[in-house]
Image: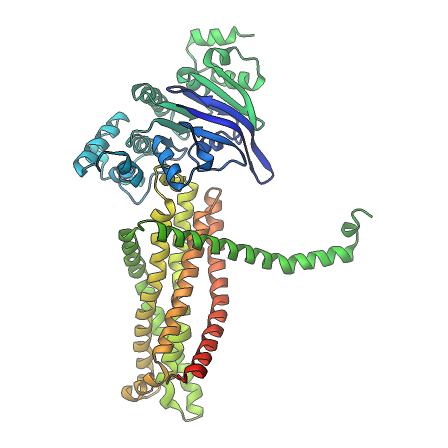
Length: 265
Length: 284
């Protein structure tokens, strides 16, 4: 079971963002989608959960064609796919506890369980999920504007993890974070993907993080796929755009990795 | 001859004039279409899902409590102003006896629904467009959708129904408050006896008048709720997008309510004449 794009095209007005894009994400894989701003990275991600509809082509999640599902079918796909947005996207009117438990109270989640969770079970699940992102129950009653941006990102991640998704989709999870929190979130993405054995698709500008945790890297450029390669292949790539991305990360890499990259033609 | 229309100032002027005339009309029709489709989506959601009753009640309570002070202030003074205006005319014809009936009828049928609508549009409509717009551009609506919840059911339906029902509740409150204000002014400034002032109210204000006021208020509430939710829900492009959504919501709420006022007034008058002819039914 996997995620598969077949000849997907999407335009917004006169601008073609994706044209005839096809690729597959294997089960348990961490796929990074890299590219310059406006190259359709987030648009690609939003097609997986059916938030955007393609102009042409199809997207399959576990063999189901997301582009042709009705509302109930889409809701079932969305229950399997946990999406972490660029913004924390927490509901301001709900407390941290209510935000994290939100997905545990939806009809789709309740239908997927043998019986609805009791409030005690929900509380336990919320506590455990917040612990995964290194937060404690002391912030249960705080509202999103009352906690830092970094904490909001972590709460957002916890909200996504709480219903136990099969796929994790990250839309620039480290945007707006300081370098220390960025590293912490990147480590978290890796740990969660490996620990929970989920398939992850990460949209990012962060080549350093991609080199560190990705299994494969997909580079989008000019509405199409420039490269879809493993990390060692990406490191050897001679594509100017990929070399530019790699050059940006050189200073941040450990000496031995820097030497390895600099040795590439 | 290619490009002749560009080079001919007369044609270019005509094109510009046509654009200036028909551009806003086309834009308004486009907005009416978008609003109709959005209200259809809300109605479909209301009919095909379990709704969201607790959130609807919460919205009604919140809207009424936030608007009450403004409605009280506006209701008192609008009632008072109309008494002063009517009284000046009625005194000329020595017909002050009709002041209470005329004043109350005008407030119930026309001024009350409009006053409540403009208060709702300015205070709650703009707030709703900004709130939903911010939720849209910060991906909160997308997040709700991705968590398997219908955002129209969860976020839009309670706000829309909350505004529609609140407009009726606020109309009833506004009418009562303006009656108190107008009676006070009639007694203190126009020197009328309160019993005399109220004696003609039942002659002018019956079931049909109340129905007209309620029907208009309901329609205006649907317009305010629909436009505010539609503009907020479809906002795009960061803070500027939210600003545009709120500005457009304020503009179209006012335009559509004025248009709806003309259409509903004509329709209700026609219906009254038809009922009078067909059934011999006359109010008052």
